[in-house]
Image (tube, rainbow, N blue to C red; front, side, top):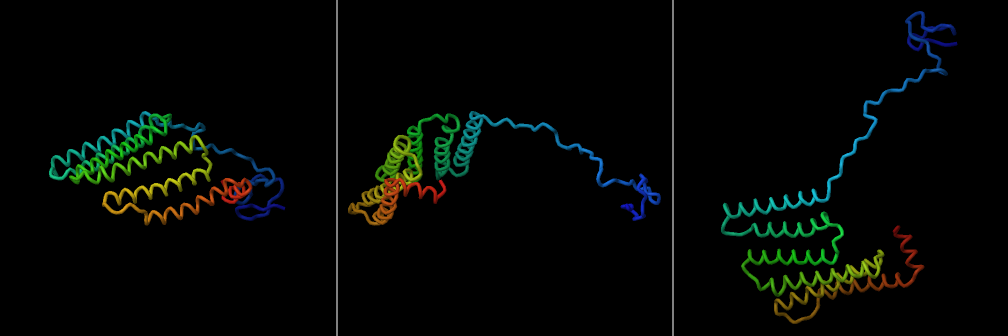
Length: 234
């Protein structure tokens, strides 16, 4: 026995409509299916990706605009202090770091590190022009920049030519950190005319040596290396 879904009156099996409210009688086992039309287009549109040349031009124009506007503002409004040199130098560093990889991804990593070191050195030179002192530049700033450039070149050599696994790269980075701290402390002591010895960098060196020995042990023991990879999920 069926009933009207609207008014609840009892219906005969042969009826197509409710005699009381004219509501259509639907068979729940044979409900007609009407496919709704999607309001969205059937074809998905694709946005053309930006070309590398356009991205490089955009970054270059943006950095050049920042440099020119800051330099003009410095010259017209604040002519006594050349603060715009810091902004211009920073834009040069960002351009050297970003644009070569955007425009030319096949650039040698060794040349990229060399260009980055030259850009940082140029930035330090602009800072020396702003401060009016060059002693720290030649005895501290440029030596530290040269040291980091050489160490990064060695790091890239080991990663590309020797081993680029996770443990190996971690070993290289820890060695780089320890040598960098020792070099910075010695250069600072030389600049301040203090006795050449290591103090705070010895603490960093000790911590790095502990991790270096642990990583070397893992690299020398294949079973331990595989277990560490499985535990660390890489």
